[in-house]
Image 1 (cartoon, rainbow over the protein chains, first blue to last red):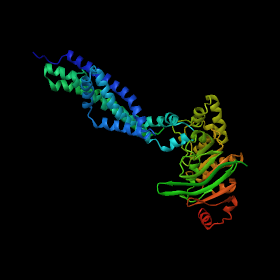
Image 2 (image 1 turned 30 degrees about the vertical axis):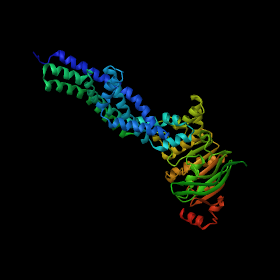
Image 3 (image 1 turned 90 degrees about the vertical axis):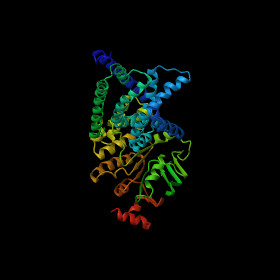
Amino acid sequence: MPTGLNLNYLIYLLQGAGWTVILSALAFVLGGAAGFIVMLGRISRMRWLRFVTLLYVQAIQGIPLLIIIFIIYYGLGILGVSLPPLLAAGIALMVYCSAFLGEIWRGSVEAVPRTQTEAAECLALTRWQSLRDVILPQAIRIATPSTVGFLVQVLKSTSLVSVIGFIELTRAAQVINNTIFQPFAVFGIAGAIYFALCYPISRWSRALERNLNVGRR
Amino acid sequence: MSVAVSLNEVHKSFGAVEVLRGVSFEIAAGEVVAIIGRSGSGKSTALRCINRLERIQSGEIEVHGRRVDDPRLDLRALRQEVGIVFQSYNLFPHLTIEQNITLAPRRVKRLPRSEARQLALDKLRQVGLEEKIDAYPEQLSGGQQQRVAIARSLAMSPKVMLFDEVTSALDPHLTGEVLRVMESLAKDGMTMIVVTHEMGFARRAADRVVFMHMGKVWEAGPADILTNPQTPELKDFLANEL
């Protein structure tokens, strides 16, 4: 006999939301680290390395996240590597983030005027020193609004990992709905929770953008 | 006097456009040479080839015995000997004036922080801007920024200084303060190659003037050639420069 929406279900949803946040943070931190390496590859002076990373970025950006999740969860499973859903989801999201963040950051590095690199290298700094001390500090400023904006995308994209049975917010809502069959109420609440998580981040991103436009320093 | 910089039959093209068509000249240590010429005459390109901001197609460039056109050149060693100042200053906007000046000495020469600050103060005194040591570039006027750029370059104690139209972005009032710094540098015996439109500076401070035209050294000699040009092209150029 299905019962109504009670407090226990709400707590279950909030627990799911907790996992959504953890998964997003995991994806963002691991994806950021990998994305930094992708960015370095994309701006490398070695042609083959630029080509390989470009290929990687194009491939990942051209494949739906859902397919990436399937490949890592089921694909590796068949090869005998069975990953727990959290790990599989984390790796899939990391791969996804690394391609997009790598591209955002490459664009930001290239938006710093070339004359800055020229000036740094004319002072006998190595390429790495000029990147670290001159280019990256300026690129970070440029990259911050779009990076934070991308965090919203990641947070929403984590809903896709519900398909491999990882109980985050969306999966939690499905489970509850299967019991009480009140889709409008259940998914409405889930949507509201997503919104409550994303909206402050979007606001933050927009505020950062405004600050960036006010003074360039 | 020993030769500081020499160019021998230097050719440089950007794609199909040949910008330098066999440029040769020599500069002795301690000499100040002004390179003049119309835009597009190749004077800035010639300058940029000297510290290998541009690669050349053929010819030889030597700086204090170091072959710049050698593919195995130790580029960073060259860049420590040859300082350059650009038209657009190119200070690092996120760093203070002190950090702008001390970044390279600290990273490249491993100078300790306290010594680096003293170095920055010394160099800033030389360009008359000690009090700006903790400011950011954007708080300075164009002329002040350019003087900081000169100080930044001097902080690496280069043997040769290149100046690439360093006053072209400045109004006449600010041009003066930059030129005075350069003239005092010249008096101190710095080897300087100055690409410039400032004929007054060339007359006052240059030991020699090189007039470039169509990618070649068209006329060269002591500053007298500015009052007594031999070629019609230089005559014409000087008439238009006012």
